[in-house]
Image (cartoon, rainbow, N blue to C red; front, top):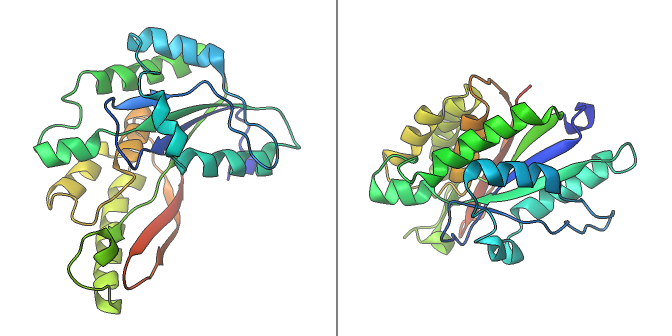
Length: 232
């Protein structure tokens, strides 16, 4: 799908697995890949930073140990690097898990709606052909992640059913329903992509997508689930 996009700016919303003090963290450093660098769009960043009231670099150090955006940068260089120039804006997100644990609204922290509104306004004002990418994974289950028992075929089938139910809200473009689908059991499946997915859906109001693929890494000790979805 990316190779058919005419976008020249890619805002990559990545999972911050370790968490961080701020809900969002950008970086201005280009992402080096084996296929060449993916440069950061400083003009877009500056415009977004102004609309958000600053602070987008306060937790920049979280990028140092995070891999979620690195994968997307390699993919973009592979698909587009020989076809046309492009820039990225890498943004880590970490706030929805905190809302689940505190049983609060995911936008209770005023920095969250301020960023989302700022992103919407900046994309609209830039005149650029912009594509949003959520670099995420889904459930993490099994003893390696804190569950008392090993994964089985039956337990992973139950995880798949719950994941697919959650993904119905995602492809329907419903951030509130998506949040409710993981908050009702306290995020029992440990969905790592909560914050980027929620941000993605809020930044594209009314968008509807389609699920391209859902799969699992079925390790009895620690299974991870993931998917690909496209939003035209």
